[in-house]
Image 1 (tube, rainbow over the protein chains, first blue to last red):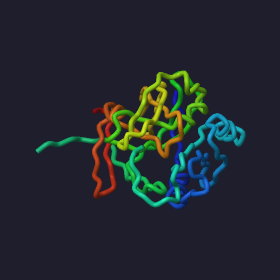
Image 2: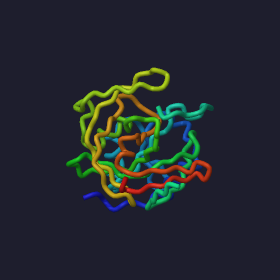
Image 3: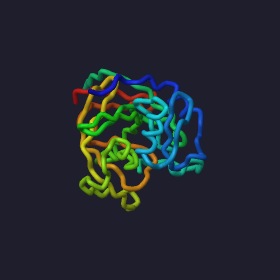
Image 4: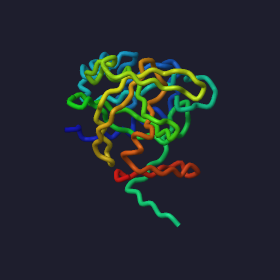
Length: 75
Length: 138
């Protein structure tokens, strides 16, 4: 059974207000307005979240070209 | 006059650096998995198939390279390789879906929900209002 959906308003507000250039191309794990882990290995990131007691972590892809001006296409 | 009814309306989400985009937040897990992660996916009517970042699948207990290979060609002709895995998606309003999702073998900037996903749901866009409408009954 899927877990009950989490309220992610704080995470989404964080993404709205932070450019995250220093994490360009990485995956960040957000818990509220805190980045609890970041990197490229999904398994390690999920384990890091679990170690902090987070059952369903929120993993966000930071744009590969974050910080560079230009129009974004799908790929 | 054509009238299409939708169950839900969502505002575009602002994501750096792309700006306001029609994105859904949902949980994803392997078909028989118990590990769920929350991710966002951007609705992309120009994508024939959905494409998720392959780095995510290790967190779901899936071996990326075990999946069937499926190449993507971008508008510029560049190749993006992927491996297809069946996963389950769960959305707060739309419910649970099973979908064969290609996962990239190299990093991508955002997860894309392509026309394979739109075959499961009815989607309408109101770009000027920065909102989109969805119903789980296409």
